[in-house]
Length: 379
Image (cartoon, rainbow, N blue to C red; front, side, top):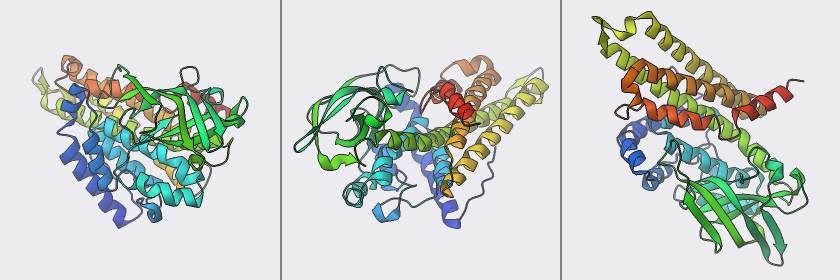
């Protein structure tokens, strides 16, 4: 299904064309092999970085792409259409850069961002813990002030890029209990005492490494504290708003890929002397898929345009993440159904998209948390 896009400039249209070309030529032919091997495509991600696609929404003065969020999200959607694990890598890297870009001092931005945004380095985002996922204010990782910096002790869970990241954006406790006691630090991946645990054995997204990361008396200099002490919760919430929009865009990309595949299959497959798409039960299912994808895309981009305009968008980001990821789960499940038995085997990618869509209902705050955020914002 051809997607009609309204982009703000001719430059952004050309950018999206480049993203589509790279994704179709460099990503799509490799995804099956990397997924089967459970191997992270580090060099492929580096190729995207060299093309400037790891830093699209950040300022040009520090090496970013200077693109509005509505353009970045549509680029992310195109990448997810061809390989979700790579789109997730882009989204997570952008989360890892958020604190420095948004709350760092000018000196920190000038020192750190050019390397972070230059394309060679890859970031990781260390927020969740075994006993503190959605409840960020309950984080227990300890960050102790010392004469020449900070010492970090604790374990982070569900860290994407664990073992591959060049820097880790780490949230820990510098003060007392609750949200006001949290701070954010940038930790080099080579820091002594940073220990990567065994990779998680996941339902899907096998080419993206996820593991616990331990910080065993990891020492970092004081200038790696982002913002002041106690600012960590605010930084984390701001990053999650951005991340939820990224996840919504990825959900749209996966769903669009599944729907397009199901339409092609239904046009080619014949039963009872007719193309399967001509049966109302199948045709109407495909029509609903197309409509729900278009609605999710519109909701996601509407939230992005609020962000670009400098207006509050947290609730709209939660709505977009909730709707788009629930939609992706439904669409990919229906795509498997359209293919019938063929949809349940790995010869066709729809079963992979269904497994990937399930993750999107969980990360960046479960959809139950999104409903809580939205309901609390109604008054």
